Length: 176
Image 1 (cartoon, one colour):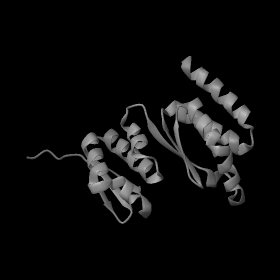
Image 2 (image 1 turned 90 degrees about the vertical axis):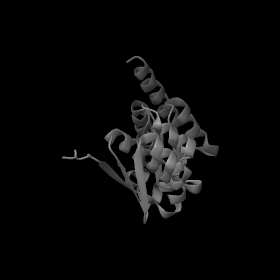
Image 3 (image 1 turned 180 degrees about the horizontal axis):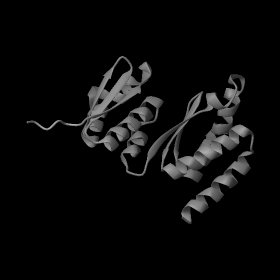
Image 4 (image 1 turned 60 degrees about the vertical axis):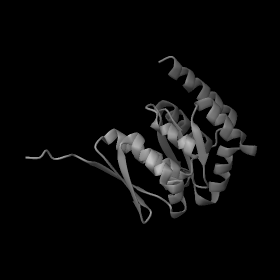
């Protein structure tokens, strides 16, 4: 009697304009991801189906696909292959009224991108910002600090207060 193989499957929606980023030129990105994580990725009609034997590897592949579909550059998305990095998406559109969306996105990015750069420097998280969402790649604890910072910015805290909060939280993490 043949032993039945257990397979894990995750499904990810991909916007049509981002499918090419996930597949890569001549399928290179998809193939590299499949090889690195020992998974199979099937893409059809804006949906990626990720299958594999190891649930952690399937989850990692799902995170990379989500990051690529979000718009992260390939090199940044590949950071998710490192053991301690995760992907987090924060929906600004769910946190603020539609009329204020542009203003809050602007607060996160800052003049000439200064706020976004400072948030990245302080947290060690790689950020990507769209009109409605912010996403980050980094360690789980650093992503949590970023989430707190984004919430404070949305609540109206000054950038200086947010940066001070981040510095204090990061110092606490170093002392763990």
